[in-house]
Length: 450
Image (cartoon, rainbow, N blue to C red):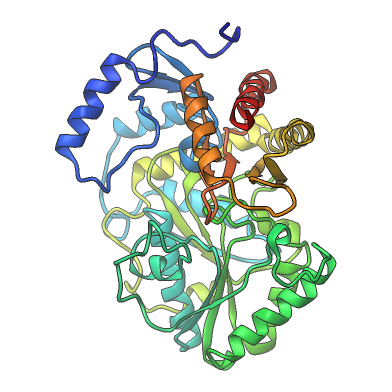
């Protein structure tokens, strides 16, 4: 018997006939690299609900891969975009500037972790923000080396792809890569190679020692311009490091005069319960890359940092034709309005607590859930074949995710083994809507185990 639902409404099998027809056209019109995950073609969406062209309504827990922290088509953002369309669409900010760019930079600078003065430059995508953060760091330090971490994801352009650790599907056959990039371990308490039987305390000390050793075997610290790190790894599996990790890394970089770049593309804009995740570490980075939920789906990214560091490049060494375009900055300012008016940070904390409680209860019923982890509303479950051996359950994860789509729930995976389910619902998703999706997940995990 079908589950009674309040928010999900399925009128056809998934995919429906209209979606299937478009997907067949997609196969003929686009290259295979442009593959799609959900076999549904969107018609419209609002909040946390998405309706396809066959009239099926889904609960969207993907948030456009973390882009929609304020939800689909938020009224505030729609109004700002409509107003901007009637005024002007493009000038190139460096040719004829506009106030919305300046206002958005000012408002974001006030959120710089650790406080103190900051300046911001805007770009188009997360990868562009990362690329430009590296350029800024090199220009300021006059050094070339960059240290990144295992399981990191920073984008798919040349430098960003080089920094990215996950080989398949992002890097295989795409070399040669950018030079002067080095790699070190990132603390992963659930699978720590250095734990020695203790999944937390020893992981800290031994992993940090391994980072230093890896660095010393590859490059002289005084030749490093920057270390780039995700406060919580996103594509790498929503890996939450020990609380001491970022403070230790800040001390380490200060010791050698290395800049610290935090990649907050996925963790930023309230996802972890604070505006930026770095705030919870109590440190001040040198540079911060941001994107995704900055403008509720309109392409926009930015690099924020200490003014003296941001002034490292010469005139016109960073920029681009469309960066900080008027539609995006209008949307960005509207997003900040939503955060202030709807107290989204508190909603993120409540959502995270709710997810952790529900998923922890599920873990007791379903041995396939090896770990429940998260920070704020950035929550995930790692699926394993056996809770003792921790063998990744990639096939079971795929089966569960596809079964969820068939029942009206959109959810994504991550992790180097493809066995982590990650929750990226809009932060203002009603809890009863979240519960409807979680109830279906609970039953689906039972099916997968069976």
